[in-house]
Image (cartoon, rainbow, N blue to C red; front, side, top):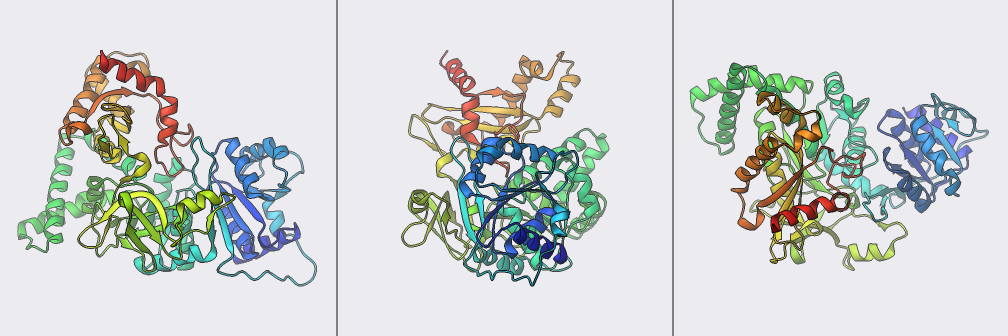
Length: 554
């Protein structure tokens, strides 16, 4: 890899790329992404990652805003995107393609040819300082323009080195990479941290092959987001529910015994001999089967990017996975806080990294200061000044508090807070998470700003709903029609009413609509880290939301 990086760095210099020149990478995860990234950094140029399924207008905006001069693209599909916008990107001079299968013409460079390109005379690579800019990372835009976060080499390294220390990452570790490398969570924690510790990274072929590829890679470390963990949990739960009565009883009994054992151990209580026997049986005959699905040697799972459901975290824990939750933002390179295996407390995101300061400001806003905090937003001085105050504190927009052990607890996001017409403040995420615990509910978005009550847009668990329909002999010609039947609406209504009992009156869902289309990155309703784009969802379903309130008035 060192030879490939140095060869590519020489090739970039030959094309006129200098220190400080922005160079984009427009691709999903693959080894060439890493080689390109390191070669760009080696010559002091600036890496501009572009998520591979962004719409054309955002790709064009990022290239123009960053003044990118060269772009690496993955394949023919992404090459066509760049060609379609090339006449509107005046700074872009060169295109380099990782896999040029199916591309005609000669107006691009082949990746391997550029690595092998010779340059006459001695090569003098520019010196790169810790304070030099390493990357512009564009935060997810909804209807507004994306913002380019400026991060230096030191911003990133000040995150990487404490992470290596906190989790004892070493040359024996293997990571399966599937979160997009263009986002700082995967890039810092799942790439630079592993690489600097001498570990090994295996790249999955695609998001559709994660399960199969993880079995082959057999990772010791996984970096993931809650949505992926929830999907795995849902699939396993569905498989158990569809099993024999004996299998269902075995799993229920195992969960009960493993949970009791974990609780006693956590509280440092004496564990009865009979429970030790049950634990041995359940751990080796039931839980071990689930661990083998992930390759059988995972020592650490780190979840970030969004709030992790406490119940789901506990289930993974009792089945033998060391799962910890962290918190961070692109603007903080990204890690601010993270739990450790030794002092893990579910429902918190742990303590700040060694070199990071965190305090709670006005409106319970989480404020961060440290060497990991960004320089600012590219070409946006007003937004930078609004976000970083004159004392150097970065205002996250998230709300939180510290528990009695000094762990940070995220309580909400200021921009996500729903304020009803009665003046009640409601944090939607905890309610959405509880609703998603239903076997029949896949995704949820609550709405109620300036309204008298909450309504929900619900994406059902398709397989579970269709299985229910077959068991109950509900006739339907297509899935959309099935969701409109009185039987399925009643099924979901009962699920919601059961969960409503856990919340205050003003936090209860009063009406809902069922959607046949998932919220996804492809349709613009999820960010690349799988968080809801609330504004985009409201815009798309505005009429449907209004109809729910009109029905309530009747």
